[in-house]
Each structure stands twice: as C-alpha cells, then as structure tokens.
Length: 120
Image (cartoon, rainbow, N blue to C red; front, side, top):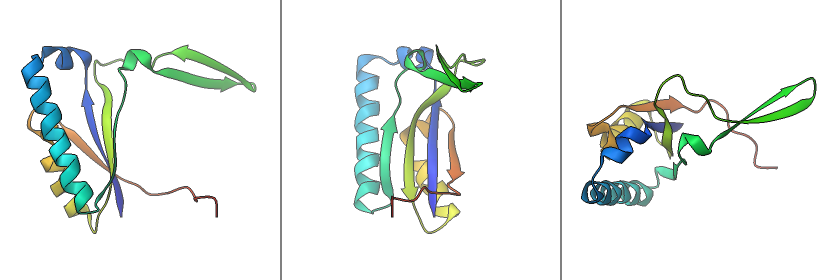
C-alpha cells in the first residue's frame, strides 16, 4: 500500500538554522532517502518551494482565476513529502519515525486511497 509522508514547516523555522545545521539536515535527509530508495520502499521524495511561490487556482463560471497564495491562516505549510510503497501502515509509521525532521516537528502519514491510471 502506498502512503504519503508529509513534513510541515515554515520560513521562520528554516531561517533559524545556521549554515552548519542546514547542511547537517540535508545530509541526514539524503541518507534517509538513500536508505529507503535502496529497500525499494521510497518511490519519491519531493521538496516544495516556499509558500510565497505557490499559486491558487479557482474556476468560477468556467473562468479560471489565478492568485498568489495560498493565503495561510497558520505559518506552516507543506514543505516536503515522500511517497512510499510498503506492506502495512505499521511499516509506513516506522519509516516516518526515521524522517530526520520528526525529531524537531511532526510528520504526517496519509494512506493513498486512489491512484490514477498510467494511461493504459
């Protein structure tokens, strides 16, 4: 079963890291990615741009409107996410516990209930 593992963060948190702390965090994350890519459980790891670079699209009466955003009510936004394919929810939770960010913030685990057809 596939699960999405999500890291939430905010610019204030990222800015609080010293250059050394940031490089250490990147190295730890790279090690995590390699470990689970080698097991075949990590299908992908994706880091999002800062929320200030995101756009929101709404279609009303058939007309799309694109705005800057999202306009967050909280400081946190989805900073990065992973797609894993594992045997059980328990295994997904074990992997999530190894995400380096889990030691300083929360990591969410969401089951993937539907996957789009690959064109076949």
